[in-house]
Length: 117
Image (cartoon, rainbow, N blue to C red; front, side, top):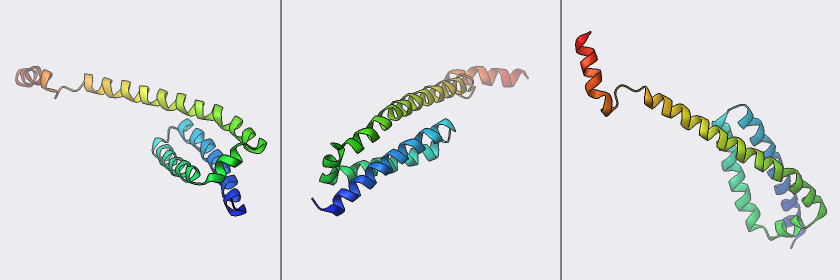
């Protein structure tokens, strides 16, 4: 492994940590579009890290282990908050659909109400 690959591994892990912190920030703000863009960016980064053999070597270092200890709880928070947001979104969509009078099951009732008024 070259020194360039090792330096890239260190940069990639730092970028991973930074993106993780940013994900927390944007999901807390309910800025889901930006959150999803960052998730995509982090996915590309992970793919790049898998291609670099120096990332596995760097992962075994104490420096990287402390970084991982910082990131793992944040990843759990992100998963919890993302699931929470998804459940809330599903509930809101179900509520909207429940009041939708143009749905097929309410079609006849809607027509009756329109004629009587």
